[in-house]
Length: 359
Image (cartoon, rainbow, N blue to C red; front, side, top):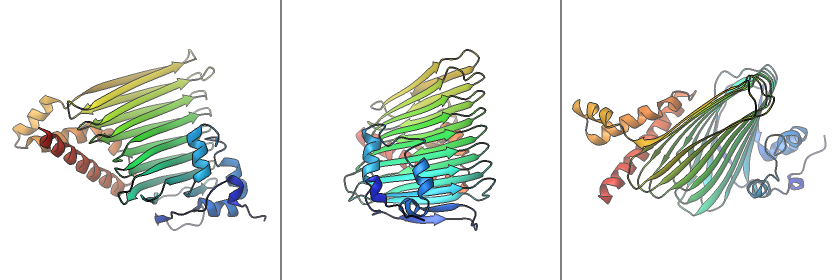
């Protein structure tokens, strides 16, 4: 077999390694470094890498990503394979250099699995991150993707996660945005096949002077396709968070369903939040709806908890945890779910302390 040279793609050699991978005992799927995959599975890489889901020349950010990629993995699950235990991967950034990572997930027909990704930063250096995830879900496959992002305070991040969902395939996104620095995130799902289905759940907490923009889009191309968006954000201190939820039903996608919720909870009068639901409907025989809200912690709920002996800060965190509960309970791995809850508690406590100090 002719070996594939990554230099044909104008990529740099990998400088950051996957530091932790937990795999169930199985030899019926492929999980490997993206650069090694370019040599071992050149046809697969050429067919799907920055080609089917996201185009390498789509914009300046994707072009930069392709040119300076320095870390990534390929996950390939063949036809009719069901992986019982979640596949877990942790990616660590060295803050002394840019973090440009790529995860390519290919689910063949009738395959089923869960994939869990962590991202963290080591060090306090000022840096940038450009991270892309591509998911290809072929007919009748099922992919459950969960992520906990914890990039550093001095890291400016661009995160793009996108899925191509074929006939009767299902992609479930559960994403915890716990970054400390400024972030722009694009979460896109193309429901191309008939009966394609996707659920997208996002939790985001901003503190300090963070600025974050999250664009979550589902496009219904296929007939009887279903796309649901549920975004929950908590804003503390002087931070800013914008949620854009976009549901687009293309002409010809009869019987499609597009629903979304975008809700933001304010912990500070100095914070700024927007929840913008957008529906673009080009077909008549469809179901579509949206809900959006921006507000403060419910004072009645807070009073009830404090009347039972809890201090104000603890009561406030419990109310917020309930507000975020829809996403938290959907994460397939209990350890990851607990880790995300602990991270949320830490960020909320930091935000409460800073608010108290400012007073």
